[in-house]
Image 1 (cartoon, each protein chain N blue to C red):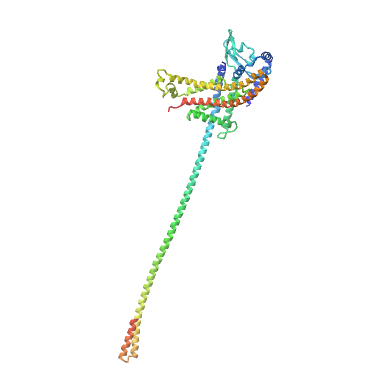
Image 2: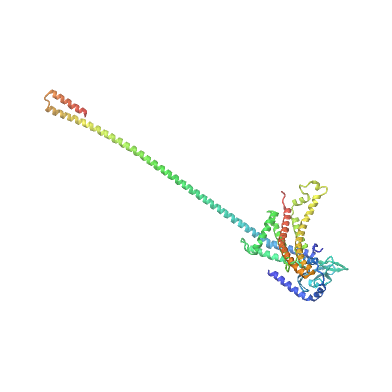
Length: 359
Length: 164
């Protein structure tokens, strides 16, 4: 807990310092935009997407946000490292780099103009999602190492405190996911991975529901994150797959011969299946979490859409929107668990299929 | 669509950091946690099993005790029965020997009585003869004045002797 508080205070101090410097310009530019119409689509995509700064609140025309480090390598101009506050919330360019605006295919990303064309440099900036990733991983490491200490200290005794809160989940994953899907003999090898992805997805699903720092980043609703997780599952499945698994793919038994020769229809379908399994894992988690966020943001957009028509309609709508959002958030709590469970269970099933003995 | 385009930077950081975390968690968190969970389960299991065994042992012991008690009871009954029989037999035997002894004694007494009687009779005969001789002497001395009288008297005397 101490570490996360430290994190928080560090970034908050940073945020206020930087924003004091950039306050004036922001106000000028923002005032020019005040008459702009509310665009729910842009607002929603903004919120569920990644960003180079961690926006916390807008007071009047002042954006309070945590600036994040930009790490960019361009083939033309080399390395760039600076804080994202230099962009002044995307209104200014810095070092020849700028954040692409409306109409650009790279909207919201850092671009460099080379020979009049917008090009994307190699960008490994610590974005909002990256920071959220680090925070959640640090939290997970701290949490489970402290729990493992508790286990070592209280060897053979009943669990206590946070240990007893998480033990049922650990046992559930071990017994009902790993042991049930992979089998009594081999489950032990895969349980650490399954536990790790379960708690990573579950924690980040929950953090995604928290509106302000350190929550608010739509991490498990980001396709890069779900892709990496799915790739891990895919690699573990393929590396550990036994002969039996590959035989089933290339020459599935119990299938009529004319489905394999002269046109290898079944093998093609099976090989595609090998890739669709992790692909579906990636899409399912991404889509479910993103959809939840879009719905919640959609309800809030309604307030402003009605508010543009008349203030009264906006207030009236807010009652409805808030109650719907409360309902949706409760549903999302369930979804947060279910999606973590489904991802873990399916990964375990794929491991089980890959290591199944011939019978 | 930026939404469905995986971002290179995020993939990069995710790959590195998640792999490191996976390694750390596996080594320092999951391994000890799973190990101690397993050892705890095993110890609970063995404790339950030994409790069950103790219970079985107790039941067996109780059974054995009952059996021993039963056997003791049976032995006691048997011994009682045997003792009873022995007693009866002793009594019967004693009665029998006593009877025999008594019979023997009676027989002996009878024999003795018979002997005594015989002796007495013999003695009496001797005495009678003596007495007869004395009587005869007396009669002869006193009343034998006539022949007929002598004869009658002697005959009457003889008659008396024969009756004795």
